[in-house]
Amino acid sequence: MKLKSINNVVYYVPVDQKYFDKWEYYQVDLKMLKDAHRNVWVAKTLKEFIKIIFSKKIDLVYFWWWHSSIMIVFISRLINIPTFGTGAVHMYDESGAPDFFKKSYLFRLSNKLCWKIASKVLFISNSQSRQITSHANVSNHVVLKSSSIHDKNQLAKNLAQKAPGSKIKLLTVCWITKDQLIRKSVDKILKALSMMPKDILDDLSLFIIGGSGDGIDYLKNIISELGLSNSVYIELDVSDKRKIDLYKNSDLYLQPSYYEGFGNSVLEAMTYGTPCVVSCKTAQPEVVKDSGYIINQISSKDIFDAILDYSCKTYDQKNKMIDDVKKVVINHHSYDDRLDQYINLFKRDAK
Image (cartoon, rainbow, N blue to C red; front, side, top):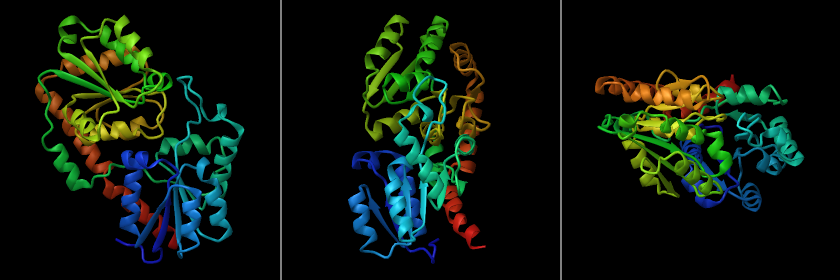
């Protein structure tokens, strides 16, 4: 369905092309904008943005990253073009990683100004909305929940062949930096594995995949110290095909994070039918809902209990968990839902 009143849109994403192509949430929004509007132009720099808005009759600017987009919001406001913007800010982070209040004054100011003057601030989860609006003055905000790039029909096809494996394959995805490894509790996941009885550990394997970073040695040292070298495999900078293969062939996805604005990797895993272990912190329960495991304490013992519980389930019980994931993904996280949410923003404003 095309919105007749808003034909021409600039999609501003100030990131390198390789990230724009690789990260699914950028592509989800590009698809959404193309499905909702007649013409969409992508700009990744201020120069590209200015060239487009002064050569086309633009009806809307849609942008990612509030702090990086403050100039395009100012310019758009001056020439009366509405701006819709989204992003991710960690208002607080119990892992000890730098949060909003530890960032530079310029970063905090640019976010706050954008939240104040953008026509509409789009939050990707209810948790993100509560966190930011409880600490900052946000003028006009709504939740436009993140979603898979697949519609309900494609999701059903992706999920059709999922079945438990004979041996349990565990998976976690993150940038391999020390901050990220701690925030996503990879150290505690490894400790939980080391606590497993030998007969169960012999049937487990954990794949840790992600972009290269400063945490490689830190990670390898933990694996070695815990005696897990034969059970844990690190793969860096994997292709999209390899990542999807791992999602499809894993039995349990582990991401009991201290903070997630939404939890895109959790959703990606669920998109291929993989049950997840997440924490009760921030947006993660919104994604998993009544499938998988939501642990109340981020501890090796709680992670251990979840993995052990899964390993002791029968084949039919594991299949039931897969079915629960399928229902949550199709009913709550399809691309169709996000497109409908987006179009309804304009219908609601028109009333």
